[in-house]
Length: 452
Image (cartoon, rainbow, N blue to C red):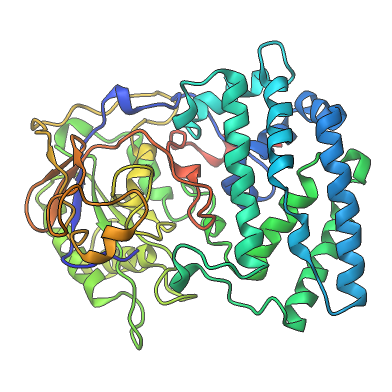
């Protein structure tokens, strides 16, 4: 994750109940495909429930979409194998099909419908669909499906058709869609799917379309979103164990967030700017400002780098500065400085919920010891001209002024900010850093994970 300008450390405050949309008791469902769980959790939920899956299979509108996908897949497979053409993009759902399927799923999600328990017992308490919480069950289902469907379609556009993504320097397709090797890889994916997916009559309408879309990520080696799963049982196991017994009242902040900085040409391991931020954060941690250092950044700069920024920062903290592993939380997925719906802020704020509940007990963190003063958000580095053109993050005044007044962020110094988490979601249009981590469940032992 790259920030233009001066280094920033974010001191994350304990968050009040109003920002918490997820039930502390909720446990995410897991399939045997972590990438699918991360990028298309809705379909993991449907497949988990025999009743929901059966209802989707027999619905006439959804069955019509399934029949079209099956016929198109056969045609694509034939063309890929026998000609120089491989129109894999034809497997995308059309806008009309997305609307048709969305309305059908909404009917099934209405009170009394087969999908309604999934909405009430999984989708709402999961916190992953926060921005739709005010909708009816039917509308929440429709909105969640439409958003997910557009995200999966985008995989085809970017990683099969070569459409330019929002951040082409780090997210663009790395293969030529007309190249014979790319066609061979697509054929391999289709062959494996044909052998592993159920027969067409037993496939939900989304099965082949979703499988191929996710395989396009694999073909382009963009499976970043699932490389460190389970998040709390590998790199973060020691920190997770400490969270269960930590005396939170001793600290004014929950964590010190250390945003990553990508490498430049010729650099390896931890970037110089990343090391500077580590040193800044280390000072605050030794002053006992927070029990945790949350280092953030994935495999970002340069494109296809073998170095994950957060992993390299953790290595430096533990190996070079003697910080206990249990004091370091790794967020190895963050890719962009700006993210979310309305406010510029580092992605790791969406991950911090994992330290907000003690395992199995739902114990809230204490309120911050110092009062929070609502001021205009001042995100150093985002006063650069490049940020003025990014999506919804346009300055309210001229370039160089404070941007987007927010009670969630307080500027302390040129290198430090106070943050409270804001309840919103990430976009599934970013498959390498999907919305899975907006408000995940409490840290838990791997043995308690439900699987389908």
